[in-house]
Image (cartoon, rainbow, N blue to C red):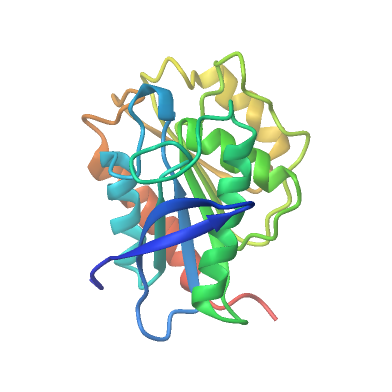
Length: 216
C-alpha cells in the first residue's frame, strides 16, 4: 500500500486541521474518514478508523484521515458538533483538490464521526459514497435524516451487541437510506474489539464498488 504522509487542512478563518493522507498515483477516487467523539478520546489514530482506511487503501483508493478541531495537532476548540461539520466539509474539499477535477470523493465516519458524516451528507454535499460505522442511533443528539441521496454505494455497519446502535434503531434508519447495505457483525460491540476483521471485509466490499467507474 502507498505510505501515508502529513497534510494540513484549512478551515475558515485561520483554523487548521492535522491530517494524514495516502494518494496512489493516478487515483480517481478517495475517502475521507471521520473519527469518534473528541471529548471521549476519539482521534484519527483510532483502531477502527485505521482498519477502515487500510481496507479502502487496499483497493487503490486515496485516503484522508483528519483530527477534528481541538484534537491533537488540530487548531480550534470543541464546538458541540457545529464547527465539526465544517471540518468534514473542509476535509472533503481538500481531498478533491488532491485528486483533481475528475476525482470522486466518498465519506466514512465512525460513531460521532458517522453522525457528522450523516449531517453533512444530508445537507447536500456531493458524495461518491457513504459509509456509516456504528452510527450512534440511540444517542440523544442523533438526528435521523428524512432522506439521503448519495450517488454511489452506501454502507451502514454495526455490531450485534452495540448498545449505541441497537437493531431496532438500525431497522428504523432503513427508510431514509433505501439503497444502503446494512451489515450487522455478530458478537461485536460499539468498539469492534472482536469484529475488526469482519468490519474490514465489509469496508473492502464497499470500497470495491467505489473503485468502479460511475455509470454513464
